[in-house]
Image (cartoon, rainbow, N blue to C red):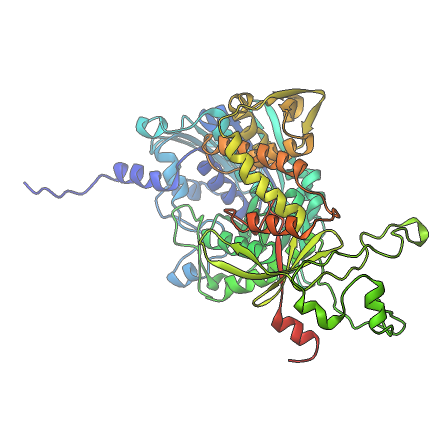
Length: 604
């Protein structure tokens, strides 16, 4: 007897279903994509038990005739492509013809469809076997009801997560397509409660309004637009968040309005953030890429979640498009260096040697030979300025005859820097081997204290403080569900959460070490996290507590420091694990390179 045998069609269908259908969210995704491909203007999704009990998707699209309604459940039966050339230029969300067959193989399914209002067709299938086909009176469009997912594959069913987790995943899918198709009305209900309702808006001018509907008005107000180069069909457009909203990992990316989770696209975004913000905390991203279909290969993943680009330079161009938007989101513009204009007076100009003596400084020729630090002179003019404003600090001449600062990094290699002094009591100026280094003294000290406190707090349990008024968190439904999943773990850290009417989350207590604003930001970050379970939660909470305490205790801006204090600050900074960004992601060190200075002075 041969040991190799052909599998039955029924078993092949169940195996294929495992590639396409992983969880209820996979079913929702495939059915919503079919509805959008059919030209629907309204999509309704109903769930029971997080989709494990029942999934129903209704649309008002083109519908199907009786023959097509039956043929749609055959494997690789599709109206989207007819040849390999079509596969190379896929312009629809679905194209393989596998989804309905895969879903029907592992569930009890009923389809009702009609091309025109009136007489339509109903098809009932259980575990891949057709139970009945009959005429039915239905409106134009298609309605598919899926019950008892994986009822005949118990090994797959036992791997499904808790109801709240599966519901959150379904919500994420519908939210993603609601953002990409603002002209389509979306509704999602769970166990009779309406969790998402988004009306149709103009796809070019109403995108921010749709973001407010789906993700919340607070986040929408913080977004900065990625300009579309003046046309609605620009290849790259969307929004990035500001640093204040960088706590969440809300990354939505679409290619030709197909929701994807592509690692290369995410890596390009993180690269742009690192290059522009000099930190690791990435803000929310809502990115729409419109590309020629033939330049994108969507046939590389069973669930069409990943793609390949035939243009090798696309990701580099994407980084260049994102960086200006990230700069605007940070509220920064390039600081112009300009030559002093007429009428500018320098200290002691034209006074000769006597001016130096009156300032209490040695003559210019003696500065380099000084062996003892020269006391810094006090400003001779008052700090108060006309109009009631206050000057941050006065111009002083720091001594130049200081020894190199003994800085070394974690690698033990010395850093040949020379301390020049303070700028307006806020920045520490260092002469480096390749340019002028500017160090923000507040965030530098914050980084030092953060790493010290993080070690000290590792074994300590935070205390809780009750809030006089509950803190109401405005979150997308999927993120609210995620946060409520973590309520028990968060209670051990000092948080108390309550689910309120309308799906809002109320916070009645927070850890004593955290201010209210930072506690809200931390909860937002946890809610937006994509990973399952609570892995890494304790570490994230610990870092938040340490960051809060460090920020309070760090030396403030505009606080004068002596040379010895500056040297100690810099020495400890460069011994830190991460000396270039504070715990909140702000940069600590900036460099004005020699080449840039030469270019500004016309020497290049």
